[in-house]
Image (tube, rainbow, N blue to C red; front, top):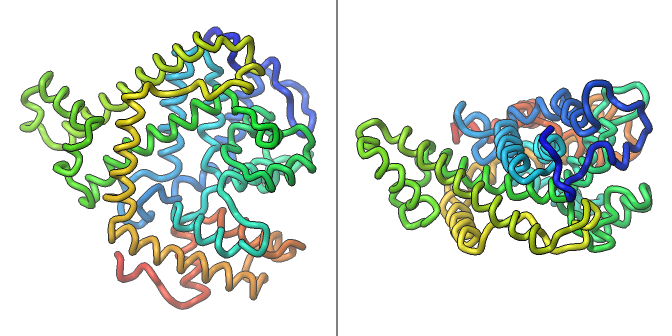
Length: 383
């Protein structure tokens, strides 16, 4: 590991795990977290979970797995430049989507509706639930028994009510910062912005590949058009060498510019506030940030993607079909728990067990189960 800045989280100073274990040999505590995440069942399932496009819509579109890998790559690059804990950044990045349902936000929103009367559902909490309880890989404990620092990074959002429930079960633990109004670690802050940078870039790529958005729509966005023209100035023959190459060169430059801007703006914020250590970071405003001009360009890009891609009629049609699958699976399993594996069917918290089971599904498994139980293929007309 590169030399850590004084405000980075030092793995040697980890606050530990819920279940005490001997220290790892030949790696640090956050490297152990990363390795456990990579070997988990939930991580493997991300390869068949949607980012924007349903799994059957194409082999080259991003999935939750490829997205998580891209977030980890961006996060590590920036962490190294800033002197942050790279291994912790990587662990948080690889785990941040473990609780996502099949069918992306459509599945999450529908499952949240189904669970309104049963304690609710939120994918950040579900990611924590996966690593704390649902992974069954060790004889001594449920879950992956990750360090507090990784778990805090995974829990990006949390309502006051849920924070109090978590804190009552683990006083002073993973949810305490939400009660006390504290900031997340620098490493967690960095992953949050790396996540945003990654999905903005790859949603442009996937949106163009799908034909749902066109280059002419992107020309009015400064963050895209500036780097597209920059690539053309350096390589005037790009249009003759293929649209895919020109797009890739544009996105590469666009990401590099955001990385450089974030490192510069964050370095300036750290120099201004000079936190004494990692604990001091928690009591300051967010320090990992973009400069004002870059942030405005990122916001404009996000607004464009929301209107042009995420609300495109074809995506909304898939969203409605996905919500139907999740809603009807929830009703079917709630009425007939025996249709689920025994561990879920025998749970004393039936509706939470149903939510856990559905949330763990891949897109294609959810479609297959729905067809088995309903006799209908709701995506048939969309293929």
